[in-house]
Length: 381
Image (cartoon, rainbow, N blue to C red; front, side, top):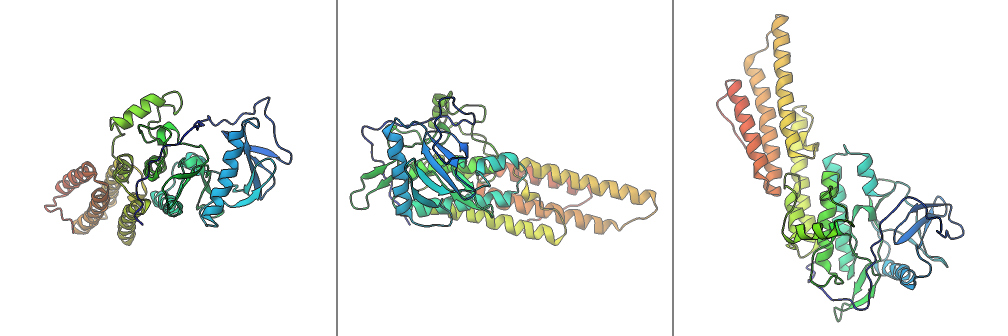
């Protein structure tokens, strides 16, 4: 679906950006029935039992907070039941009752599991993108796409949460509902009207989420979203992006550059990367080689190539000492197969990711290895 770019200004609204915290405020009021506060921000999340949580205003004296919660409930009604969207149980006197997802946020999960495979990370990217595509089809703009607002269900598939964004009228294109939430600096698309929001501002934030998922940390990790907001904003304006040496880097930069018109386009590009990963992974498994494609960083591939070669060398020397000599031709074919597959895999990913330096690195390293083992040809099929 080709979604037009809407960018309608909001009026008489104050954007709410509250730093999330884990500690309890001495003056904090906890609604009756809440057993544990599991998240604190502009709205708090309190666990009611093993099945449900209560989302309630951090400031009960601010009518905007209360209105935002009611608008979120209305947005969830507009979206309807969806396997990748948080399930609502209805409004209560103190807030919105939602289903409890004990596996927590995707942000916390990848922080605690830094060695999660690239295959799994790409699958999460695809799930988030496809869910956002559905959300946009309902004329809803999320307005705060980030990994903190992505939960994990019992199967560790994504659940998109925190729908205090806005709804666009299908007939007029004007804003019908607005929950007042906007992105933090690292997910915020620079624009003249800071109160505006559009499908493309969601896609910009999606780029930051994909960056976070693939790299395991937020963009500009040395900067703080609140204290360094102006610096972060200036970097995006001046196109001072992080080095593009990671899988899906080209997709991320196109999101930041506003080059996508819909989430469906992003989904197609991610699917191409997933396809390349599966092909290379399958080829490597055929020769019983641990798939290097599971590494997130391109330079890790080079290190694994070198380690494989060093292991081959060590085994060769051990065989010579024991008087057991293997056929040189068989050894050369084995190393040749490994290097070719590494090259093919990197070439597939680099073609999609527009990251040719990684390809040149692998090619140069492979040629060096071929020369070392008296091989004369490097073939990419």
